[in-house]
Length: 195
Image (cartoon, rainbow, N blue to C red; front, side, top):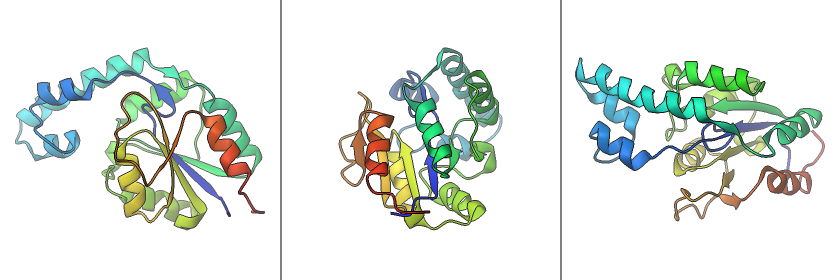
């Protein structure tokens, strides 16, 4: 395996938080699908009012967030191995910046929802690969939800690691379910070829 890039999700992957997505969806009036797609479909001023509700929930979780165990060591290992990193999140730039500063984390590229490229579409992953001039078979995705898997599939990235939690859905057979970053590191290290 020629690994050149690892794309990470933020919430639930790099940081621990406790979003109650079903309750948030109910409060916003989202019947199904993506919260962001639903909000974007609303007319003003309802759109802005409901975005403010979502952003309030996101801000609370940002303030309470803790660094996921093992992420710092995993990022160091990737750096030492010459593997680039990117962060793709549906969270906003303000919260993402706060978290990266709080935990002193650096990624080669950070895409937030303000880019207009949002998961579960593959477009944000394709944009990252284009920026780094790498192919899907040289890329790995690390996330925690079906959105990460769906985006990877659409971007033709076949190596997807999902960090298991109580929120992990059942239908993620196409991803490699893992419990820790150490488990991902061991799997990758055993398969890496010279870069």
